[in-house]
Image 1 (cartoon, one colour):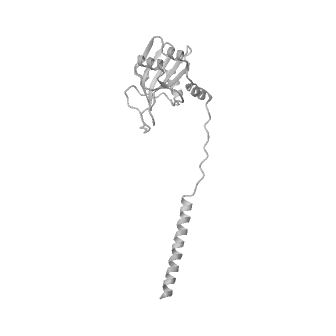
Image 2 (cartoon, helix red, strand yellow; image 1 turned 90 degrees about the vertical axis):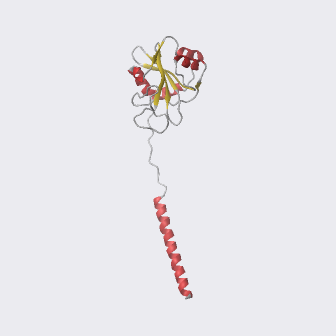
Length: 192
């Protein structure tokens, strides 16, 4: 009787060891470290990179005060912007096409993307002589309030003048001028 328990115990240990080896082999094959696929770096567009660097610069106060001077016309809907301004906006925001929701319209305000809605919504836009400005909400992980100022040239081309992030919404031209005059914007890198 004594030997039968020894044999049964030995067989149990062998079966247990075999099960452990099979489990270890399975886990090693199933969860082994796999090399990551090669990631190709995107080619840097020198024009877009130059514009990105210019958006990080700070304008002298005198220049900021002149940005929205003169007689101005307010734009109430994104469709009212001329095509050259729409194209420049799409280029700066790295969008394939101009996509900006109207004031008060539904848009993707958070990082939960709902298809069919833009990630940006117009707050205030307009034209002051040859300069166009677009203040808009940009949704994502954190909502931002970018302001872009563009110059429409006589040959229908558009030149980027300046961009910043406002600290608070400026829903009127008067409040936007006050925000600019009081430096109510963030310095540093911007996400358009």
